[in-house]
Image (tube, rainbow, N blue to C red; front, side, top):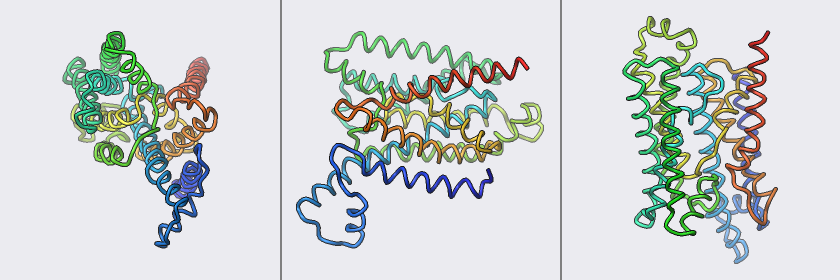
Length: 335
């Protein structure tokens, strides 16, 4: 598919899913009519004011966060696959997801969120950056791709143990339940203030990856070729990883652990026809936003009484996708 065709189609798909998401929920409201009335400045009656409150304060933040988290994780996954030249790579492979999760769990564990709500996203982003520093320090000054992956796996395992330890010593059942529900992943019960808190981190991370697009494209020709073109491999790789850490940390801060988005979406983009890493980054952001928003709609429709967690449903979808991808990779290698 040509780039000129994909952007309009992706925009149309996202807008359709966006409108459906605004109209999805336990209370039926006509969001389109409310938006038109608000734009025209028309007075709202009591019933319409209640519907407008539901739309503005409950559904709109949820829709925006699902879009931002999907775009951030998909873009981070596309960058990781291009950087490591591994189609099975995703943000968690270098430990940034575990670092963000552990930092957020510690904030919840000690009840620091009661001091200020901004501590949760700040701690998650800080945790992802600290995990990144640990990986880079273990990998060395000029790490090979395999060394970087092994360091990421080691750090991720260590941080995962820290999360399990926090769950084991949770001070009370309510704290354990709060941490467990957060780890399952969800964008429910969020507000516009949380959108504003994570948006700067996501924009910064996205800009770092966009500016690294030429380096990622040069890297498809090999590290030696990229170095001969004037790129400083260690510095450029650190910029890409920092962008991934910011995107992933911000996403984990507001949505908890939502896996497989960064793995699935870049493959869908390449299947559609995007091979240039720069194009895959942009296309993955669009498609990731639409896909996670669609999955969040399914979360509300499949189990309206006891809402299924977003991360749980993504695992149920992403697990078979990963197995199919792994089987396909092995089949191609055997030919």
